[in-house]
Image (spheres, rainbow, N blue to C red):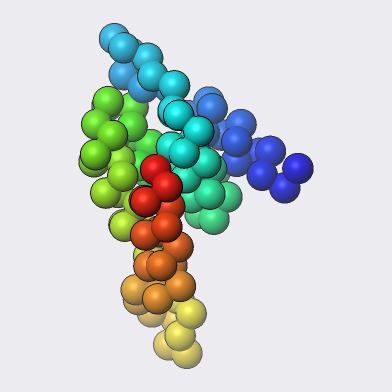
Length: 96
């Protein structure tokens, strides 16, 4: 139930190119739901993952997971690559 909103967001957002609609397979869908759950609905809707999926470029969509690895989890509050997010995105990319 916790991911219902993220699943709905991916279903609504990731429809593929207008000239050739696509439905993600289970792995692609699960990876995108995981990302959406982690970054939020607004960020996912405007993400490169969603944009590349909707352009029909699955390879670019997979690579775009790696763009979401930054966090302010440091004393200075500066965005930096975060090792936990790097690992999570790698797992999502592999799943995708």
